[in-house]
Amino acid sequence: MKTISSILILLLLALSVAAQENIRFGGYDDQEVKTIFKKEKRDGFYGGFSMGYSPIDNKDGITMSARGCWIMDHFFSFGIGGTAFLNDIDQIPWNYYFNNEAVSETSLAGGYGGLILEPIIFPLFPVHVSFPILVGVGGISNYQSYDYYSTYYLSDFFWVVEPAVELEVNFTKWLRIAFYGTYRITSDLDIEGVSKNALKGYSAGVTLKMGQF
Image (cartoon, rainbow, N blue to C red; front, side, top):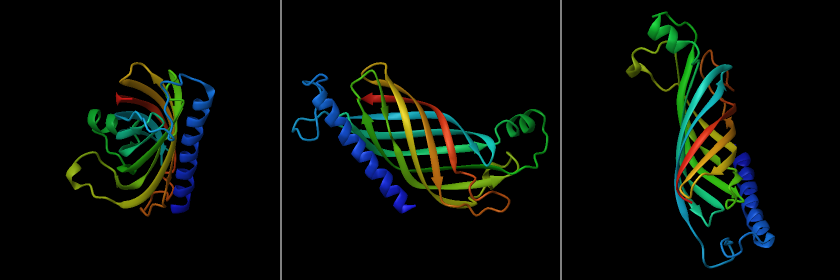
């Protein structure tokens, strides 16, 4: 896990530096773009909120994420973020709350969070891409009923590395919308009746970013 994290972080840093060099020598608004080799830099920040879909343990699930990042000279951001998840969404809420039916299948819920590193490629263009990666830890619970939330206990902890690609659209100087895809890489789970790879897999959705870019 540590080796994978190190390799991904190095690749992302290399992409960020390469993007800055391409723009600097490409002649795109030379007065606006700054590079890591110049003294004058323009830093910023943003807060992001995401909603997405992810199959978890072979069942439909949703993810809800939030992050706060500092942007260094347009091309690279870092910060912290977290994601909450819930699976079996097509069965449990409707059957339990509206039909009061018992649910026998095991469902999963939890969350994870950690450090986010995000190279941004061609950020001054109206449409561009970024490659955020989250490295952190999380916890997961398994249950068979939505009732009595206070009785839920963490079933296991895990490490997570989640690289992503985002297609960003600059709507205004303070608002961006990104369409993203990620892939979660986690340590094995140890929960009875649940696959050890239940959390490993993709997610896709939309992110709203607001801040000073």
